[in-house]
Image (tube, rainbow over all chains, first blue to last red; front, side, top):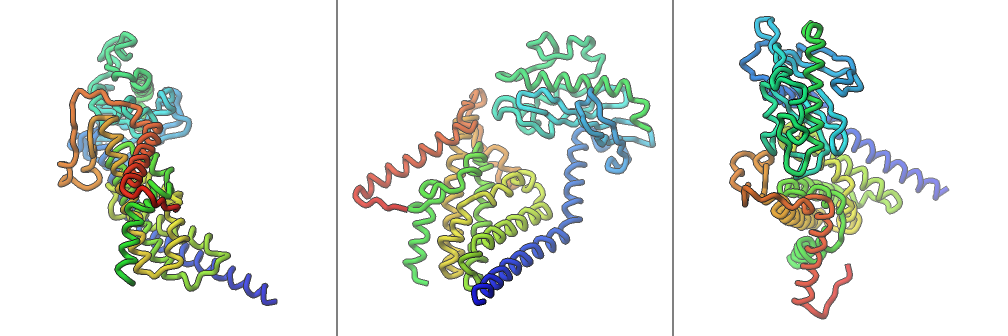
Length: 205
Length: 220
């Protein structure tokens, strides 16, 4: 009997601490929930403003979104949210997510901002696993490499052949010691532009 | 609490029983994040805070504890503390969270924290346990920053790169670029560099200890 009582006390103690621990975490989660959502939204907006200058549009990007179905050109397997910038209800630019699945070390996720006329407003890599010190120059924080896409479009450079890294006879710089990473990004950005060209009409609906 | 005990705690934490160099605990997060000095500092601070809090709480409830349930309760407390830190950072220091966020859950896997709970906090007073957490945390932090600095300098020819993202613009003076045309030595940044760097640090410590007190060898 005594042994049983000991076990019950131990069990009760564990329950007690579990309840306190869970309670504290839930209270904190509850009281920080809204603040965290606001922070995440603000951070997302700031990253979008980097791609499309704040002064170019007057709508709320977070509200004006469209769900884009999965597409091979975008490398997406699930529908993804795209953000639309407008001024006086006229389309200005759209920010879509593109995934280059053929990076050196798995998928490279990026945001591609395309102006209404089909030129690039900007590209940013948001997630990747490329080699530190070699492939990670694709991050804006490490190098300006990704900025070379600005204002490029399907007509600029003109031919499809030019939409390659220099090593493959194209127009885009690669980085020393890393060719596969920039190659994957150039191809993915090109495909995003193709996707935009084919779907522009419905993207702003 | 006597001064000598606090002195012993300080020496143990910083040198004689250093978490990373002697106990060899918490190596998984240590080796993973020390590719730069900034990352090392970030994980060091987060681990330090966790260690102080968990040591304090566990020491405060040690009289309620029973031996057969102590480990699950320690794990529960540590996991709760880490989650609270993560949520608070997300709510009030979001920029810092973006830099450190990925390291926070790693702290739960740091055996040093449950190790101190088990071997120190559950047997000593609250004040001694808080101090032990602080000193063990500092010892760990120093190793993280040193290893991060060495790997960053050798690997990319810079030091405290991106520190302003963590501590704010006023600390950007810490960031040094030694040479603009240094191509970097990739090995130092990749995981093998972490093992080699840590091994060299442990060797250097042992060498120093052997030189200064050649006879006594303390088994820890």
